[in-house]
Amino acid sequence: MLMSPALPPSGMGYRLREQTFHAVHLGAASAEQRRIAQMRAEAALQSTKVKSRVQQQKVRYVAVPVKRTTAQASRGGTAVMKVNASTGVPTGDVYEAKDEGNAKDGDTIRLGGDPTLYFATTGDKL
Image (tube, rainbow, N blue to C red; front, side):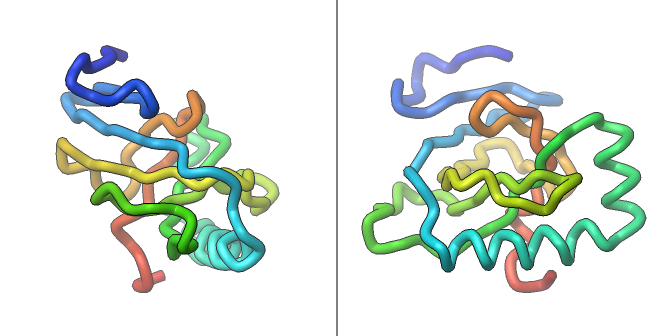
């Protein structure tokens, strides 16, 4: 992991598999965001391919997109939530994911310091 000096101190920058990924903590999730995150994570985790990937990568969380609240100002990234892959329970934190290196669904990123499978580009396709 390399911290990029070009990134603001409020976020965390990581280089994973030659990808730069920047995440900013936006705050606590609303009840609606938790419901949507849980629903999208359940849909993603029904796939045997995704379950296999979670086990292979030894991650505890998946990141799924959620709609922002009015208090969560956009800085140009996708609002995502971490959801526990084994229980399906959202963590309650919303992050803004700024992909600067073509992160794709199924890539491992870090949100809040935890390895997380990224499914933020899936959106409503789930």
